[in-house]
Amino acid sequence: MSTVKIEKDVPAADAGAGPVSRPSRRLGNPTTDSVFSGFSHLFLLVWGAMVVFPLLWVVLSSFKDDAQILKEPLSLIPDSLHWGNFSRAWGEGHIGAFFFNTVIIVGGGVFLTMLLGSMAAYVLARYDFPGNRVIYYLFLAGLTLPVYLAAVPLFVGTSKLGQQFPLLGTNSYVMLILVYVGWSLSFTIFFMHSFFKTLPQTVAEAAMVDGASHTTLFFRVMLPMAKPGLISIGIFNVLGQWNQWYLPVLLMQPAGGEAKKQVIAQGLIELSVNQGYKSDWSGLFAGVTMAMLPVLIVYLVFQRQVQAGLTGGITK
Amino acid sequence: MQHGKARFIAGFLALPLALYVWYVVWPFAQSIGYSFTDWGGYSDEQHFIGFANYARLFKDELIGLAFWHNVFFLITVPLITIALALFFAFLLNVGGRGNRAGIRGVWGSGVYKIIFFFPQVLSLVLIAIMWQAIYRGDDQGLLNGLLIKVGLVDQSNPVGFVADPTPFLGVPAVLWWILFIAIWGGVGFYLVLFSAAMQSIPKDIYEAALLDGANRVNSFTRVTLPLLRDTVSIAWVYLGFIALDMYALVFVMTPSQGGPNHASEIFASVINFTAFNSSRSGRYGYACAMGVALGIFTMILAAVQLRITRRERLEF
Image 1: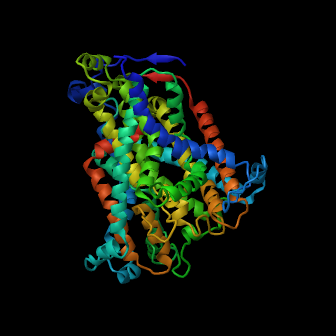
Image 2: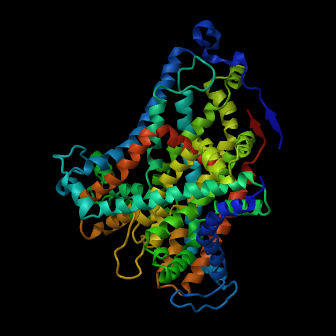
């Protein structure tokens, strides 16, 4: 593979001087420019509308009552704000309980993923020991294999373990948290590995000279220095685990008669599949809205980090 | 300095490695083992049957169907998503006023990116439930309502959408409707990815192209596209994984999770149907064989894609 290197930072390349000082640099004339720009906006606006309209329709429909949803599905304006939809979905629809379950599981899952993932990545990136490469590639192997390949043994193994240790069996918070951690480790280690590799050795040596132990060095010096990486991969893991649905559907099945501890994605699937029997469209819309809004708000607040975290994730 | 190093390494690696091996590696390994047995799942009774499950795969009509449906997604999802994302990235970045060389966003390109990225942060389950309401097969769905209002569709004969197995271009209609959602949800992410890659192309390359007399479209096709090759090929591989999955959409949206009448079966849905529906015999072993086949297929595909798209790399 040949590599061509192109010089960066050539001062003449600064295009910021503007059209006044360099009129010869104009691309085309203003008329074609504005026509082109107009066309761009036309296409972009159409796609933007296609993205926003369905979302807006769901959110606004959640304020309608069933009668209005059925009579005028197209209207965006609810005839009055039926807040009752939300309280009904939260209580009778169990969205509140789903939320609670999801927050516990994702909270524990992301915290442990970040802690254990960066610990393993740090050791693999900065310490030389026999078997280092083997363990690293073992973690990487998990990136390509589909989860469906492991579905049956994962389910059977978890059910069996649950007969001795209910906490590690099906339908348990602890179990699902640990499963999430296991399945998130590959990518977290892959990402943080390259991050820890780039941290300067001199800082580590200085800390060691000052008498820091390996553990202190990691928690007090290295981890804070890796903060940008931790934020990116943290966002990635929060979204990934919040949106996870297959593992909960597979594993959060009660063995006995206890209540199912569902996460929000799983619960909404059930609500939606059961639609055929007792049609509560407004409740379903309210549930979807409640599940959607927190994620959208977090995204709007941190949109730069989210975009960078998610796209940076696959090009690393 | 060496004091306690081995203990430190072992201490940091033990827990992550244990979780990863128990929840990821071990189920994969077991899957491979079970795939050579006739294990039915009710008891622990299982017999070694060699490659019989794999031979059965090739004769299984359902698997054949699922295979072609996944191939359909494998071709259409990456192709259309990348084409649309490049098109919009072009409009966003090159559609700006052309009085300077290089990549400049159209007015409001930041806002467009935020909006286009929306579906990426939502879980596929939410998107699927939302589109289920939009796709409703009677006159109360959003799309049917719109089409009836415009006069394209007769009120007494609304479009069936995901309940419609009639082939269009040889592929069941339900798959086309699911494809549409996958693209709707995916374009924004790749648009942001390509945009970021475009903006990292140094301006002096465009200056040079400009001096050689390239216009806006020229400099896009001759400069931008070739330099995006790496990013596009990563996107292609990544979309390939998504196209082999697609289970969330099929699971939530189609009748009896792969229906109507198996018109939308994909690998994942057949695996789940086989493993957790008692109508098929020797089901655990057989489902594991399917999983292994899917895993091998995925890895071959990733290797082939990386091989095809690999070329000289340009660094700047």
